[in-house]
Length: 615
Image (tube, rainbow, N blue to C red; front, side, top):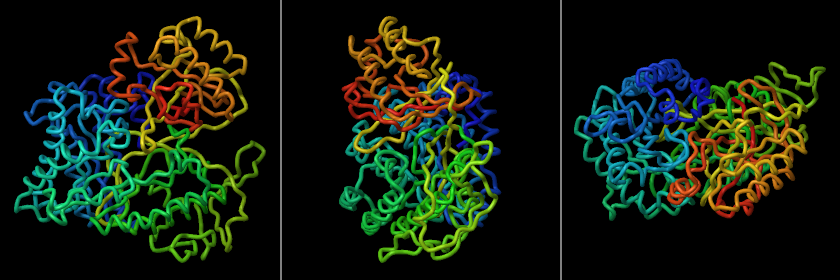
């Protein structure tokens, strides 16, 4: 959402709230930094603008640690988590709910984090390991801490009539990792969802102006029909008290490889799944975006992002993509875009996408004709205007020509020049945001990227590398790690093998090199070089060198983990056995080039993404 918050600490490995707090390592300094962010990032004026945009709901993500522990002791003392846990966020939630009441906005109150992370995403507070079920001692303690946060929230904000009953739904836990077996669906439903439901309902008093719907996220366990037999009266749930949240992104595998028409077709194809699920219980699309590429997704400016995606053809695609998602997701109980605003990504920012013209200021105003199923076709039914439009031709400086405004008319958009899309991703810390929907609102985090290609080919002093973990569905997790060329190859790989691979790498010029973590002795050298050779066959990737470096083209990569003190191999292996590849961090989302997974059999379910260091 706001990369600048982490920028001063990025070289030390700050990639999420967990690492940021550990690096600062001073509650007073941490509180000062976070207060500055909370005071300025989402203000009353955002709520006013949200209402003026015709939206009716905000989704408010909150952290589990804001109430401390049940015993009232700071989390750092009792759990080993580095969060402040002193209630710093509570007055900001107070303000957000009062602003929602003032501007007539409903709120989906979403518990976005869990002890030790429920999904390994940066927006869970901790990127990488998924420790909700197995870290910190007895797993039941972590569940109890989550439930404590939920019930304290109910007591403070649901039961207090002065908030006017603005909280219409309570999300028990955002995106629990049910797609690769870390947190199984059976465990989540029986050990987390049901006790949380009972605790929340049991703490709502007669003072509450409204009983919120209790919302469960599908954990990317789809199709939604898989959930039809869950949360029934026979299982102890009161009829009409539950709802289902599903998140639908198209910026990662497999949709990342779709053509624009395939994105539209895929989106419209979700209609029956959503409408059928909504007949079973209220079901809403609680997150989505306009992003179609998660490649180089870190730390670009908003203008860089929009100007990379605003040629005449792509402007029209973005508008059509918006209309397809809106009409489809309204077959459910509603929709919430991630997010209201970001510091760096137009395709993740409702506010900036609306200013550009990708989203209409009047949500009933659609530009494209609809087919018999209601899906937007390629045919314009009216003229559309975009704030900026660039064209494929370049000026004398080699940059795309930008016009301040452009109006496009015509019936068929297929003849317009085409171009490629840019990247996308998300980054950290809970805050507020919004977007329209019946039972739910918007808020949160997105952020990121895009470096500018140049013809220079120089070896960097520092760079970032990432991989994205895949289970049943593609993971949206990513993480960061700074790698210094001077430390290349000595500890994990061994000097001789590292030097050989590095020499091969140098022959192609501009190759960024590092080591693959070793799991089994004797295989690491072959694995690194296999990755290197496989990637060399792919098209080039653009990245930015150094914290403030210029762009360069890289033709090959291998990988190294840089996570502080080096551990003995056996100790690392013991850690990874329980977490599969979750311990392979820190790293970041990047260019999306796929590496041969056969090069390292243990990581069979992993897609490697190699790319830019672009803070």
